[in-house]
Length: 269
Ligand code: AMP
Image (cartoon, rainbow, N blue to C red; front, top):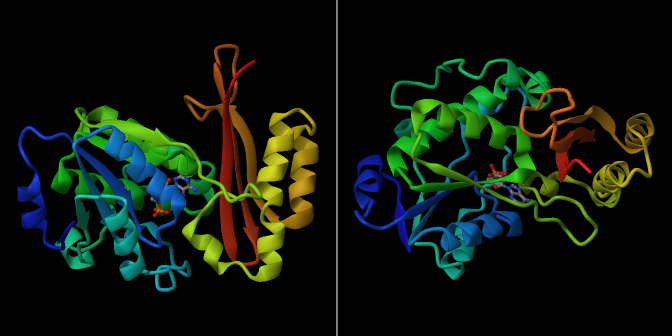
């Protein structure tokens, strides 16, 4: 497994004739990330994983400094997984001209997670564009766990920056009790970890029709500080209309100081 820190070396690594799949991550790897690596392997000849904690997607007072950095363990997992190349650039290499944000993500970046974290999607698009330009993969794999992020990245790659890159989505990997795996789950205390599965449980009940949206919100507020709970058209992230074929239940909550997100996407019955 090749480990590359330098931009030019990464650019040159691209092997002509081989199909490359790329999995961007911020490290702190778990089984959810490894599922994306599996998908990448199924869809290409070579797999590149990046580990880069992107400062521009963290707001003031957020957890950039504390974000789990577990490089040794991450590399061991990726090696076992048969990854071909790990790209671990420095902040200076990614942002040689500074980190000023070009605000690109319009309306869709200001709803849901973008309402609470206004900087977030601009930072994500900034880093994803930069990483795609360096790695130049044929396929890029993202998790459905971050559904709004996936939607925005799809829009951006389709809208012109990298029209030839195929975006593949990996399903959400969950713990046995239903909690969506996340690097940030490490922040939860024992008590909070016991409460956390109530998030997916409630979304599941809403999906099954055992709760309506109002009672689901009330149930969530019993356990968490609710950021949002929405049911939207999964293809547009707008209100459901007669033309909606797929529905997204999207939710974010705070548990103590940890923000948890989760979703269920399903075909309209
Ligand atoms: P992160 O390192 O958290 O920025 O995530 C890197 C990629 O892994 C993103 O595309 C996420 O959507 C994806 N991801 C995070 N958690 C999960 C999960 N539980 N299951 C599947 N993919 C995930």
